[in-house]
Length: 248
Image (cartoon, rainbow, N blue to C red; front, side, top):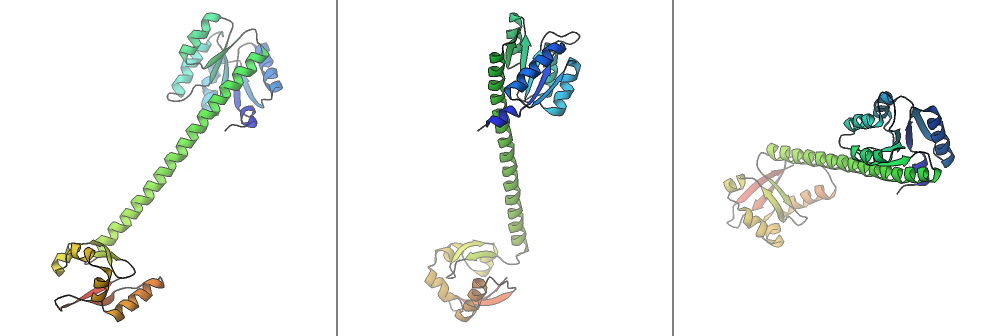
């Protein structure tokens, strides 16, 4: 949501070759409460000024010698190729209004100036302009957040990939009872262990296969969040054979 201060602290530029018109507009705007007002009587300066300051609103006279307001609009459109062009044109010619809107202006005010009309049109246009900028900024923040999360995910995937590449045998996950929850690695076939069998066995059956003393030590390490390296423990198979596992 926009506050009253957001509107009145907007960055404005008045462009008119007549000094009297510039001064009159500045007085009107300051009297209405606007605090950031710049001006120029040289239309050739407008594009560079906008490039540097990115005004929230430009009040642009159309009838100027050397370079008229329509030419200024064309220059501004080259800067704001995909954006919102915040131009409110000033004209005494009724037939110029439609042409200015078609050229990219967002609204117009007529000469001679009417204070109520100026205040209303400027306020409404600034509201739209500032809301547009808020949406633009929000989208940028959202895009940056997505990029950051994607980078974190890639880092996590890379870490997991390094882990599996460094694992000499296989990688698995077990719950607190010793039940297998995830198993990775073709070496299981070399050991004569079927993944489906491991995952489908009941917790009681699986827990019974491990050496209980060694399992107790392992659970103690895990419960204490204590790092361990190359811990060896045994698994008794249904056929009476015994297998040794090294875990880190």
